Image 1 (cartoon, rainbow, N blue to C red):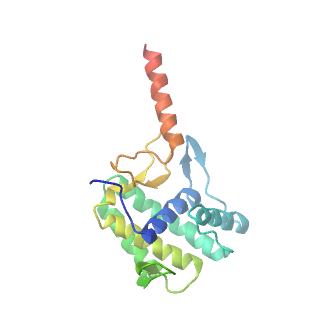
Image 2 (image 1 turned 90 degrees about the horizontal axis):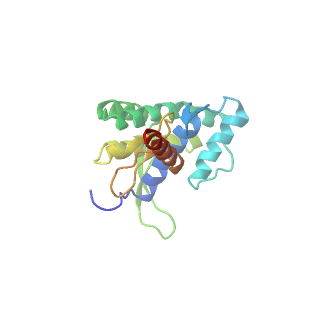
Length: 197
């Protein structure tokens, strides 16, 4: 593959949302320490979803509690897709994506904004926050796994970190969720080399 990986702006947005939802709404590890998913308390869960959307440039006016809870549940299922794709099990990734597409009622629609050409978007059965974003995320993951970009869905390779990412680098060799995890691994390798000399 040559050049930077290029998703259209909508696919890039929904894939970024998938990463944010998985990383903010599912438990595991981040940067070498345990990471707890936000509790199911209304303020905590709605704040986490709002932070995820704000991180990708779509700050919501408000986040209904039921939508936040649904996105948290679906984030766990999106994690299955990232983990399966990262391990090379595209059959498992595709099976979960197909279930997500059905469960979110993702439907294609051509949309365009002011001064922008038509582009393919995926919507849920109505305009509720969770339905729209969940359907878009499911479709974005389907577009990645259903193309030669399936290997671009990753899980951090740093010890005690399981945060996910989409590799859009030129060479497709990204292994870490963040520069912090990459630095942590490099520093540990450097210390190990120094200890043996």
